[in-house]
Amino acid sequence: MSISTDNEKTGMQLASDAVAITLRKMREYAKPGISTKELDEYGGELLAQMGAKSAPFLTYNFPGYTCISVNNVVAHGIPSEETILQEGDLVNIDVSAELNGYWADNGGSFVLGEDIHGHGKLVEASKAILRKAISNIKGGVRISEIGKLIETEAKKAGYTVIKNLTGHGVGRSLHEEPHEIANYCDKYNTTRFKKNSVVAIETFISTKSTIADTQADGWTLTGNKGGYVAQHEHTIMVTGGEPVIFTAQNGIWD
Image 1 (cartoon, rainbow, N blue to C red):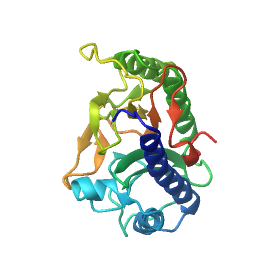
Image 2 (image 1 turned 45 degrees about the vertical axis):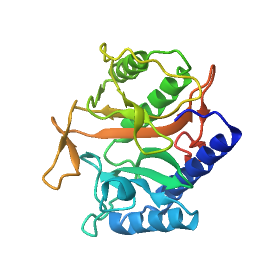
Image 3 (image 1 turned 60 degrees about the vertical axis):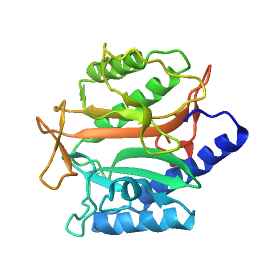
Image 4 (image 1 turned 90 degrees about the vertical axis):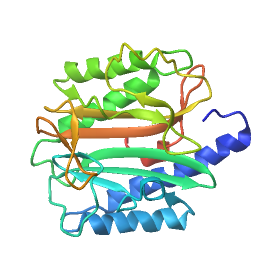
């Protein structure tokens, strides 16, 4: 969407606060020994308390309030009573929701407890790359240039990017134009970021894989070459200078 009034900006901020606070509190609630189903139900309760509705459930009838992906799962992990969190797990939580007609999206990967498997470096790289990408976005910048920056920074850090998962426009629905804000330089994409538009920018930084493959359940995504992936995501408003980060309350950069 494109924001043209103060009311629209306020509406986006409230929706973004709901998903950001939920993401932060879910991260704080996560601990070894609980199931991803329990963690997801906690997230669903938080959204409901703020009057928000799960976007994946509303839009796709996804079997969960949030997506929780653990270790080798790249994205769209289904919350399950069978998946029990363990010390050192690489966990990704993606929270998107609708509130009063506005939609916001955010996510973040983190290491649960002590980093006994050494995932911390990947997580920090993803965070840093997202920060650098967002700081370079303003009206008139080519989307492909931001993709090039993300991929270049990933390579510098010794990683690859997932090429078939992208950021996207958001605001009046979960996915809007621009539909693909890729993590690499798509030379065929000549689209530029538009001032006052709302977009969800997300990194998918990988140790090995470059493509996310859908599994038999129709949702779960895993890497085509194995390894691990860290994702971080903010909903922002593009301006003529520094973007407005609507989901800043998620604390993924803290």
